[in-house]
Image (tube, rainbow, N blue to C red):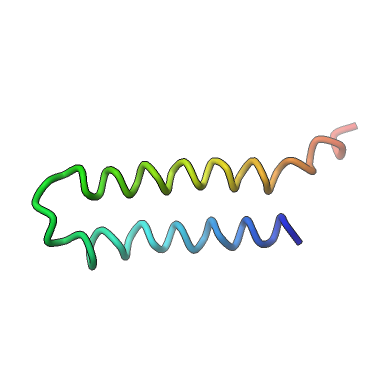
Length: 61
């Protein structure tokens, strides 16, 4: 269940990477508005990938 939930969250974050900068951050004239958002989302995706793949280590043997 954790794997499916984390993969679903990754898809939601990927969708937010398109929606948030163009709809909510479009009035921010500085480049660092979107950059900060994408940096935080990138860190969350890395963490969610670690959660989703942590159970795959035992299947290699």
